[in-house]
Image (cartoon, rainbow, N blue to C red; front, side, top):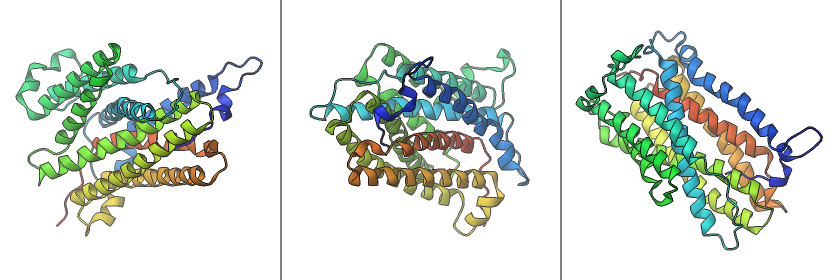
Length: 336
């Protein structure tokens, strides 16, 4: 969980020649390209010295997956925090502007690009003639790719028309499609793997997206009991989400890399190295969340945990990009 003191944000301070919020805009302009470098350059770094070969365009595929995952987190997090805020007695009426429309649009672009790759036989289509949209209906991966495209298109329409009650279904459909895509029928116990991925993605999206929207909401609320109550309710759900993400992540890793080989594969395979980096990032986020939770319970003013807020947001953004990178790397070999 993350806490923030709305009045303490230096980016909101007005001064001569300085516009409110310019600090956050500059931060986004700097951090977004840096975040994109993780999936773009990550495959080469992770594969170095392993003897493995990545699929063509692995960096671009990793970036598209990262954008798709982020597009899932934003609307689910907004719906989750709105639900929490509506149940708070005496909550201020102010709400941050929704990011559901741009998130859904970004997801639509990413899903369409990924579908074009599937239609070209999982190769990068260098010209439009290589894209066979009709061929998507002939394969399982193609149908799942089309489902994701249509789901994000519906998400855009729901966000534009402000049909809040229906906004949860398109990202839910994408989560199901991703869970099925990650575990083809040829895999051992594919339904178990899909179930683990379904829980993992759902909890991660609520945790990450809920954190982002909680921070944005508290920027509009003055310091008071409503803000503290919202933070407390978010913290309880975030703790459960962290436990579920950890449990499903460990179980999935053991299915990919049996216990007898996992220590070797964590350092000698690209998948293992990237998974290890993700574990380190999640551990850092957990420590930041624990620090904020302690401040919520002990500080005279619970809204003083501003320092770990930005660090936790950045760390969770890195987790999302590393997750996208993980999907573009060759799976580890199940050594006997």
